[in-house]
Amino acid sequence: MSKEHIHIGNLIKKKLQELGYNEPWLANKIHQSRGNINHILKQQFIKLDTLSKISKALEYDFIAEYSNNRIYNTDDNKHILMIEVDNDKLSELKNDCNCKIIGHRSINNE
Image (cartoon, rainbow, N blue to C red):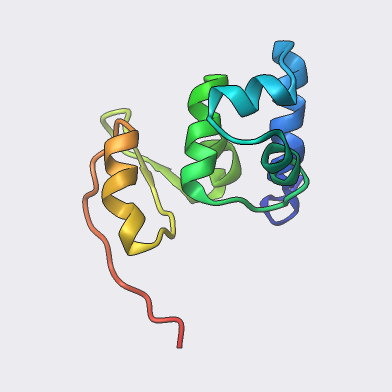
């Protein structure tokens, strides 16, 4: 399946089933309503911070799965991942994951 056609909600549903969990469990685990989880699972794209919380809850790296075509290996067995994230979420992302931000640039969407 090409990365352009990945439906992140479906990937999350599949992983929930694989692990024997359900939507109410996930809602409780990431402190969301069942209705919001139901909405999330219908989406092809979701917010990065939400995806990060779901990844932690299910102990599965959905971010790497979704953006696999943007991951580059380095010689020291580390990876460089190029992602787009809102400025206000940049420091939150750095705190939520075991990562180092080695550079960034602003992109104007005008």
